[in-house]
Length: 298
Image (cartoon, rainbow, N blue to C red; front, side, top):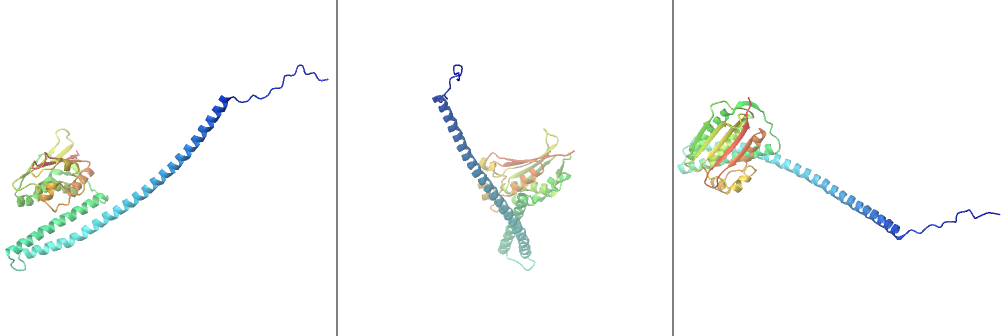
């Protein structure tokens, strides 16, 4: 006979209460939502990745096309300069009477043609230089030099244009040496752009002053300032003056053949020499000043 008095009564599993069911359902809902969001984010990330890859591909294509465009401009400008120089030289020979007397009016027209050829040659030269700079084709050859000599040469070269335009050009150069590490040809080019600009945009009877001094605040820095009494520059134009193809409205009236590349070239050269270039003007008909700051060497 089996005794059952001391055996525990059998237990029946208790049904989950409503709170447990609610928590389980919420957890399942949250899990499902997180999964959905994860899938959506993965899809968006894949889409963004595809877009970025396409942008990179398009950017590479644009860079390649820009490089080809620059090379084409460089080749075209260089190829045109030769024939243009030959045309200018031939016209000059005829205008000078080497092939017989030329009527005065005809001679004037021929001389104008020569000047136009020179202007076009200048534009082609600036296109070539700007293309070289933009395409990193320039290799600078730095050597120590007293930059006073470069400024003196630039002023001497500018005398003819100053006389032609009836403008007085004055120089104010420190007596002490101002030695800097520069690419002589290109730094002279940058200085020439500033002096040439001031002369071209200053009316007859005006003046251009060229200052070259050692900074009073920093003995290891030279300051070149070209100051003119010319047509001035608007505040709006000053903001973009050193970018490619930028010319003020007044500048277009004075010299229609300008390329808008000179100051871009000058700035690129100065920056490559770890220098700073700046322009200031009080406005139209109030002149302008261009300042270059260059580090000096001991």
